[in-house]
Length: 213
Length: 400
Image (cartoon, rainbow over all chains, first blue to last red; front, side, top):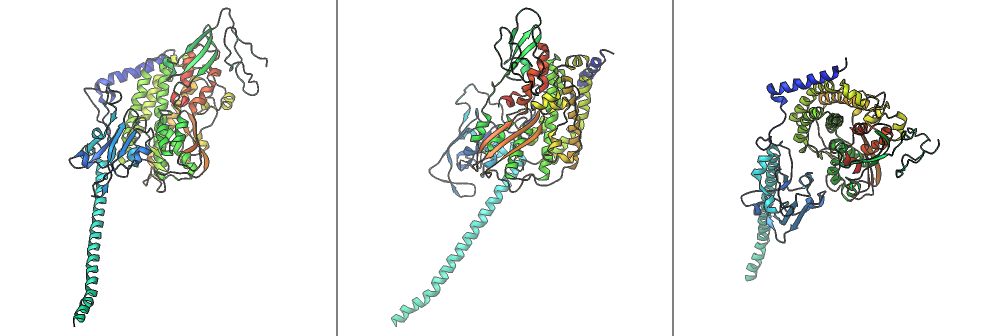
């Protein structure tokens, strides 16, 4: 019969229309500014810099190695390396960035900077409401705007952040153990050296004694 | 064959006047029947039916199309040259932007050709993850293609919204897994970036369980609809000889009745482990292209069910693979996969430096578009829109 297919299709739409009143699953959209769907845990928008402790400037994990700057596909990261050094999370003296800018009008959210960073210093944010009327200054984020605390990172990506923290703690423990070992070794070596110097010291000491004789 | 007459008042496009009698079997050049002048219309670049910025310069005799010249390049972004200046890894996010509906299959094609270039193995689990994601990509691409096709016939969005509702679920999974809905940047040379957790697999299983119902609903909505049949059947016929000669691939080629699916021919990845059929069309018209896509979605569901059942535990990255300092030995490789739109291939030449010496994309959208004029000659203007929609192109891939 002509028109049967159309009626069949109409029945399908009618089913969905009526269903949307009773079934929550058939309502697939939300009223955006009032209602929001929380972003997925792995969601990524633009990068930010992680810092530990209270002070963002001192606690910045970035050591200005410039790997992300080199690997960034659209080349939207600009880093200036410092002249002096400051201690990092394990207490090792490292350089730090005097300038770390990301042009988020160029950034394409590919996450390659996060992948290549050996220091877990750069991570992806989920903040997407970044509209601004200042096209140049407003979209070029400097290191102060980019710096976010480790707690913030934990809020965004809890599982990933826990893994990173465990890894960093392990590294730190290793470094500390190594430092302790080297310290102990150094102390032992010093003691040995002292003992050695002490041992031949007695004949030398004896000699003058003998000389005195 | 005599040289076709040059039509009055029209600049020669050079396409219609070429003598293709040696095996091309082009349709006869249509000569205007009535009196009066031909009308030249530029459809696009901002025509709503063109899926982006694309222009068709058509010459009309009344309603009939006498000549059609596709004009593209509005979205040219220098993809290949950028890739030749970037490292292999840095090209991966750019491949997302080729066919932005199916970024995961683009990733796979590029990863596959680099793996061929360096002779790298991919762990079992990663291969399964790739198959799962590629088939989900195929389903969401075909569903939205059909949605756009019906919208171009005048169905004001209902089938498209049904397709998008299903696509939304798949994209939610992509976001949970890869971090991004469309620009996934997920596959790496020798594996995948993050592992599919038990929660991801559970939500994938839930999506796949709902898919047959969705396809049934979609078919009830469209397949026997008289308006769709009247608009699609017998329109835009593509003969198999021409399809083969022009290098057409994907659902368009199979709708013309040519049994050629790279998943079956090349067995790339682990596709030889799955049982699935390759749907073929009979007439090569728009309705066959629609039907082949629906049936392919059903076959994809069976592949997904098998893959989700068999997925083994294990690593997802080849331990030998490096993220930084990746320098393949000098050589060349061509890797190709059956992307939702057709054969997507990457041809790479390495000279031993971190950047490829030559990087070439074989895009299915562009090559499927080359027969547009042959399909449209003699049809009416309204059918041109439908035929163009049935080719299934994305301008990001055509212009690159």
